[in-house]
Structure formats: structure tokens, C-alpha cells
Image 1: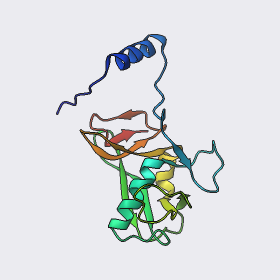
Image 2 (image 1 turned 60 degrees about the vertical axis):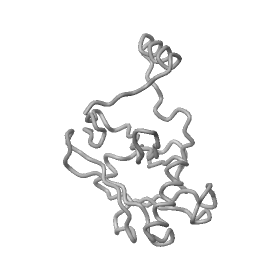
Image 3 (image 1 turned 45 degrees about the vertical axis):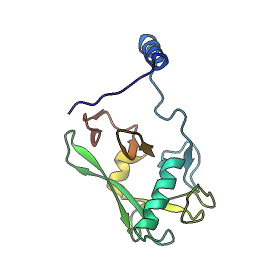
Image 4 (image 1 turned 90 degrees about the vertical axis):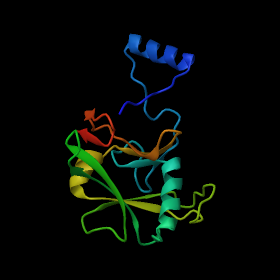
Length: 166
């Protein structure tokens, strides 16, 4: 299946100028990235965008997952076109060796069903090796909507974007 991307003339000129000069486009440009509570800025943990925070809160409310006890489990598993694929699901509580990240305490968003309750991300030790430094974003366009993993550890991704090589 072919994917079509539309660009304005200004975007095409900017992309051409970046290609000629050897610049790489910053994948986080224009995003409001949130650092986990108790995590020093610049440390290699996991971060999320404000769009991801809002969408996680809405989904947790729909699935009746309490922000006080449950959270979003983010991980990797073997498989997919490129060898590793992302795994994301709700869990009722963290496991013993999980790294737990808390985001958005007191930060309300439009349509927030949790009234600013923090959300937690759970990451198992094996997945953390591949996910440290990652930013979880939520993308909503005419063509697709879903979570987007901006992972600096990914060296190659498949065409559909659902698997990667580290």
C-alpha cells in the first residue's frame, strides 16, 4: 500500500534546503514535551507530549482504569518487519521491577475526565533498554490517528512504522 504525503511549496523548499545543507529535521519541533515528575531534564528516561497526555487520560476514563492504581504499559516485543515492535496497553498496577514514570500532576487539559490526575507509564527492564530517551506522542491527521513513538534508539523502521531495529 502506497502512502501519499502532501507538502506545501514552502515545506518542499525547506526540506530541499535541509537536504542540501545536510541538516536533519528535528522530530520534536513544535511539540510540548513533558518530563516525568522526579526526573531531571536531559536525563534519559521516557517523555510524553501534552497531546499524548490528553489522549491517555481520555482512553483511561473510557476503559475504567483508575489513574491512582493503573497506568499505561509501554514496551517492545520481538516481531514485525524490522525485528522489534512496540506494545502499548493498560495495566492495573506496575510489576516489581518496572520503571514507573508519572506525568501531568495538576495539569488539566480540555476535555480532561480525570481533572488533572497524573497518569503513569510502566516500562519493564528489557523494554527500557530500547525505549530510554523515547518521546511518546499522539498524532491525529486525516489519514491516521494513533500514538507515535519518537525513539532515538531506532536505527531503521519498516514502511508501515509499526516495527523497528535498534
